[in-house]
Image 1 (cartoon, rainbow, N blue to C red):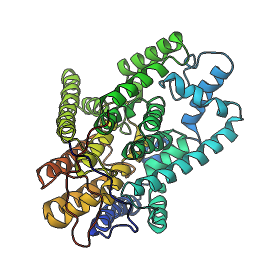
Image 2 (tube, helix red, strand yellow; image 1 turned 120 degrees about the vertical axis):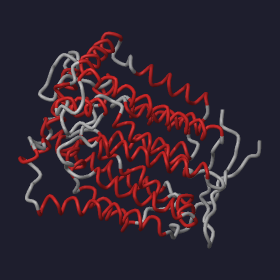
Image 3 (tube, rainbow, N blue to C red; image 1 turned 90 degrees about the vertical axis):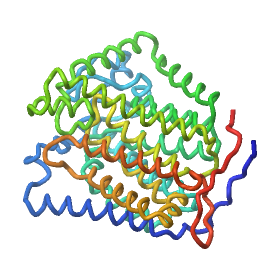
Image 4 (cartoon, rainbow, N blue to C red; image 1 turned 60 degrees about the vertical axis):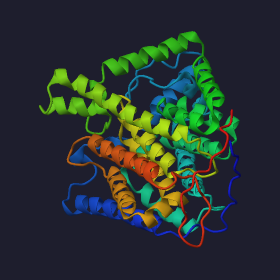
Length: 432
């Protein structure tokens, strides 16, 4: 099989109207949504029962309790806090031990500062996915300022959830996969999985970019670290997971955007029969997974390589991030804060810019997708879970991947030319 070398780094960000058009659509939808809330005098707190303002660090205090129990020689799964029992893998409590050594207020402040730093780091790394040598700082400042004022991001920082740490580990792992630094990549992705389980889906990218042996190594490392506190604590963790899956009503509300939550919401509003809700959830989950697996198989057959994502891979990335919200039982507002990342990668991918230049339907698809991702950052939409919106975004990312498959070449090119950049397949031997 023919080997290929990565194209040289760009000396300047590629000039493309796509990033401007997508950013404009995102910002316009976001602005209209917030303007609606202001003009109708709905407000962001009491009227919509938004819990982000209960008190600072509501969720972090629960993590602090789990880590304090472990520090004092007790099980991190023994307490049912105001935020619920401990549904996190054992390693998460171990990672929190340094915070348990501080006063809870001080540890929350340190946690929040580090979370903000992780958020900014994700933006910097995300811009580098377009293979530019340095982040354009004005773009970075505008993106950080706008996103930091949205409700899902405020939810993360005020409640003290770990979403931006998880996102940083995921993004850094994916970035290192592109640079073929597989060992460190799977370590970072493994840490993300052991904070919360949903990043496990990114194992598909380990298989896609690194091959079977590295994917198996990722699986072994993930499985081994479940035993970091011993078999007893692993059983305690599994008991909590079973409880939260079987008794979800405590967490089912309009701020939980999973398919399971949506079906329960539909039952409570007499839009769906209770007996049909479970079937609806299962069928919807299976259908989404089948679509993802089909497109992943198409990408795998093409043995993609190179130091930038192809449009096909960007479509798969966006599908992965929406599945992280749709498939678990609990996907509260704070998880929505991560949805900007696949769109950011799409905006800086040279192959996407080339595709948008020569295909008006593709350009329109990217712009519509950008606007719908912007709607994710509304505080609420008509008092219902954002599940239908996430399903629609999944469908649009699916269309992105399909267009890439049907276009001439399905892409991995990261080298711009003075004219339109064409999407070419960079084939190389899949690393073993």
